[in-house]
Amino acid sequence: MRTVYVNGDYLPENEAKVSIFDRGFLMADGVYEVTSVLDGKLIDFDGHAVRLQRSLDELDMANPISKEDLLEVHRELVRLNGIEEGMIYLQITRGAPSDRDFAFPDPETPQTIVLFTQNKPGLADNPAAKKGMKVISIEDIRWGRRDIKTVQLLYPSMGKMMAKKAGVDDAWMVQDGFVTEGTSNNAYIVKGNKIITREASPDILKGITRTAVLRFAQEAQMEVEERNFTIEEAREADEAFITSASTFVMPVVEIDGVALGDGTPGHVAPRLREIYLDESRKAAG
Ligand code: PLP
Image 1 (tube, helix red, strand yellow):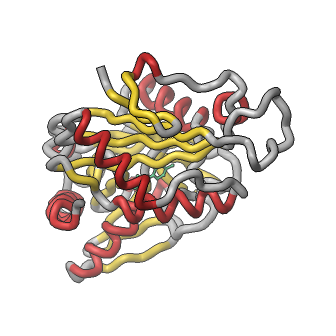
Image 2 (cartoon, rainbow, N blue to C red):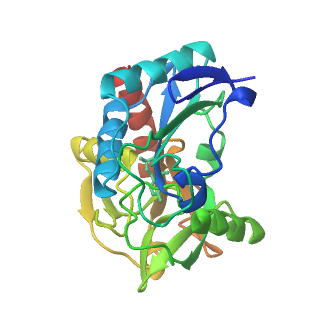
């Protein structure tokens, strides 16, 4: 049984409760972050804390916890649950007013903050990284503020189910002919020594892993081009990969049934994964 955190208390998971009037539950009026844990330490906590504040600001939502206290809660949950490898999920909502209403509640309404751990032994050594993953393309019909990390995840969840039904691992979403991102990750293609990924805008979530990986790529003398690309271009690329806090860097070896190169992970994605894991572990806290 996990120990979770809810509104200031550390509780067994089956005793943690949230109101049925919570805006997160009724309106998806909440934001979240997922921070990974390696060697019992947090990967890029600062990056996640900064993006959390930005998501809250964009939604005119207050931040109920200081960065220092948030770090302490993350560390305490890792300790209490004995997490060596895994993730910490954090969610903040606009709280639970006394009734359902479209209008935002009085700003004095106490907000809801919940954190829990997900134990994933072997996360870094994931065998899927050696094999690579397969994706299909689907239309991107999400709302226009994907740069805000809201809990409004119904379409990404449906996208994962479409992928599952097609017998593959994930879906890349396409808007006006160009790839936006994966259902829960950023998408990249590789041509020669060049890494191509869509530029940051309200169309995508600016991944914390994306920022770190692009920096490491440039430091390793790889060329990075932030621009739109189509599925057709992706199918003809030398390699492709995704990034996210829970998958790090993961090669993509097939898009819509077409194998990339010889259908195995190339050189760039596995190398970036290694660099990312090494550097993140060194900087973990
Ligand atoms: N894009 C979407 C839609 C996501 O949901 C996520 C992560 O959940 C990402 C990108 C990757 O972001 P990060 O690297 O911060 O995990």
